[in-house]
Length: 205
Image (cartoon, rainbow, N blue to C red; front, side):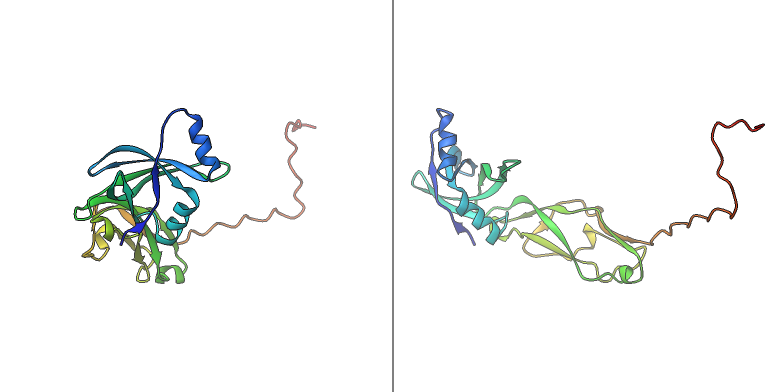
């Protein structure tokens, strides 16, 4: 289900307008895509951040623009390295009845039998590309690893099918594996009474 978002069209000149927006707690943004030409807009940073926390990055945002209703997905969000405040947002207008591709996270769930037996779990893939209608895009996909033993692995092709979405990422891509722990050889203690070798000392002396 789409969540409501307030946006307003903005001017792009002069550049000082961007600083003015940020002082007002708003973020410069742009929206384009399905039936929408590239349009500069402004979004309240606090409201947008709250909606992301509550609904996730694959949320469908619904708003009015130029008298038209628009449904959009978050395509990109840039943040300031030091303050972590949003500095620019890019939204993609979408058709709710057509499938679109997006990235989603892979979340390992369960306690692997191999880890309980002393093995080491390694995750090698953290996100996948999926295809679905915008309102059915999952925020994440749970990957059950409870049945993995030492020497086992799980790949994209091992995941159960889901009627809401299709995973586009190659089925051969490995998600996680459990390897046997490597023993670290113990250092042999120095022999009693042995004198340390003096580097550079003449052997005849």
